[in-house]
Length: 304
Image 1: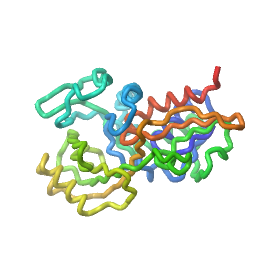
Image 2: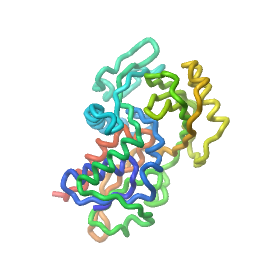
Image 3: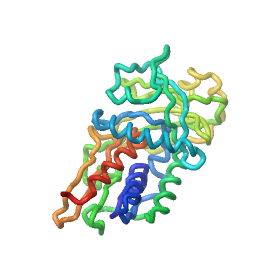
Image 4: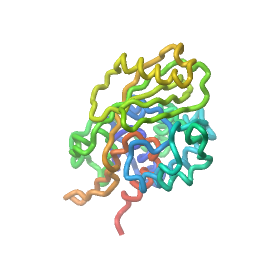
């Protein structure tokens, strides 16, 4: 069995398959630390991902896993951190929200203690756990999914599926971030204006305070824009003034693989082999990774 794609979706899927007894290889175009997953914030929350009824179940299944992993934050990269979604209301969310422990309404918005994932550490942990389960990771560029030599091929290529499938329904939503020295912020914050491509959020990670952000539809530019970076810092500093003087450590850009609906399904190939699609997770790949991985594993089992 070969999983194509080495981001959080690909590695999580490969791990679930390997720990269920399958012989699994991951073929990835680039190392995990250079994927969009590595750039992610990465707060557990269903953001820019559809369809909501399925997403809610996948997200809740993943939440249980992250809550367990948070017992070993240095190893897994997962911590439970308090924060607020400013301006958000419970009645504006799907049925899944009622099952999120501790999610509550406050004066500013919705408060919760949610998984916040240090993605470089988490991706390295996923890879190591996969290797311990006798899986492997290889840098390979795939140009034809049907030519991948395995009885079951799992397509976890994210935005790459646009050209590889091909599936023009997958499109990039560009996110720009700024990483600064943390001036003492210990809680996360989000304020999303859905009518604008600009939002305000900050996530305290071990390597610095991550500031955001943007959500620019159909934007392919991987280079950070200095003017946008300055606007991001200013918006975050309006919430926490101490951010204004924080030293900038890095600028990051990620292209979220958005689709009108996640594609998670079986596709029989003409030669009798099986292709499983698991892509189009938008800005919530981390949020649904484990739920989608388990569903992909079920789809990979022989029919009957």
